[in-house]
Amino acid sequence: MKHIPNCFTLLNLFLGATAILYILQPGLTYQAEGDGLVSIPEKMMWASWLIFAAGLVDFLDGFVARWMKQASEMGKQLDSLADVVSFGVAPAMIVLQFLRFSYSSSEGGLDITEWALLPALLLPCAGAYRLARFNLDTSKSVGFKGIPIPAAGILLASFPLVNWYAKDAWVMDLLLKPWLWYGLIVFLSFGMISTIPMLALKFNGISFTKILPFLIILAIALPVAFLFGWLAISAGFIAYVILSLFFKSTES
Image (cartoon, rainbow, N blue to C red; front, side, top):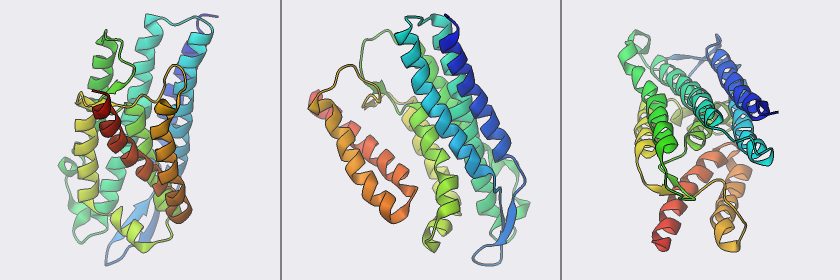
């Protein structure tokens, strides 16, 4: 019985590793705006669903451990190792692929060196650092310090779906801008290793004050989902960061 929560955690890891396999599949080649050709792995959107599923399992393993009263130090460490793969390495591979697409859509882009792609690997490094710090944190704070790695990973996992279902040319064009991906790498990596107080995605007890920021996030994300589809996750993430700064500053 004591290993049932660990099985959920290992399922999280399995889903993340499978997502990486899908991300690295050969892709379709199509003519981008301009003279370049872009190769988009048609199976990469399945990696998004796998990372989303890993996020659900990541939530459930802690719930199951508490429900069965089988929380353990091993489970805590195993959870962090799984999170590095599912929400660090797998999303980093998505960013790396989009960087490759971005450069290959421009003249001479196929001649780029691996140094242009390596910054994507800062994401799992920052996520691993954040998780290690979290495991050593003995404070009883309900909130998070820094952007949670599952939130960062799910944000990045949404972009293959944004690309696949995009109906507006400006969205697809934006996803082929290298500066967008380098900006996300810097922002998310700094956000994860920072100690900026963030709203907890899990909390004990329910009150209007606790759920208010999440109601606001929902109110922002739903119209964006109606207008721009999967960009709602990006909008919800931006709202989450801003509301974390606002609500935590009002509490202090």
